[in-house]
Length: 300
Image (cartoon, rainbow, N blue to C red; front, top):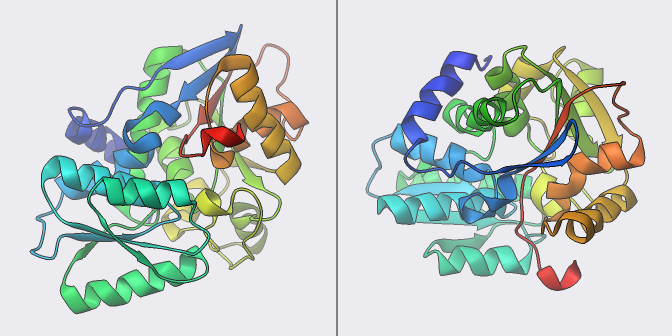
């Protein structure tokens, strides 16, 4: 299933009154940071959560999701805003700050396994038992379309961007951005070396399972790329890998240089530029998506 610009435009109309229009910071001529870390619930994920909920009739059991943290926070936030029930399954690697945030938003939290895939399977079993409506973290059309509204917003804010650099987990955001841009800019998809879901999928000709580890595991910890993401982005992105050390350095640089508090996943895209994993050409106008801020500020 290929996500289209029309899907993203419909999502933009649907969620316009609910998602924040996050700022764009020009850090030097031709370089922008899209601060989605300032979105409701601390990440871009709330865009997809609102689009899925607003496009569905909520069952009595409410909505259910599996998440490394950010998707769950987004679902919990949207559910509270819309007055519906949310149950969130998280893996054991989920950061304590995110679990605390889920509970503060009123969601029921269940630890459903060691990694995201196990939490997902547990949540789907629970949904089958209760009749709750699933909100997948990335491999669902309405979710990915909602995430893509970021791209439409970015183009309106930064103008003629040549390249958008974005971190990849399960691929919903990247698919949404590719669809939302619809050829108006190149997309550089960045993954930790220790969680190369997109990179391996492109090599294999389809999603394949990978091992999950490293500093980005709590937010970029999908062990397999989503089918919608693969179908939408194959042949349309530049895929690069960055080390954990580069991600940590970029995260500290965001705080030191711009006073932007980002989680490791939120700094992964910038790490591609700072480490040389992606080197822009002369005059190339680049926007970097800082996708999340759900982190312990004491570690900055």
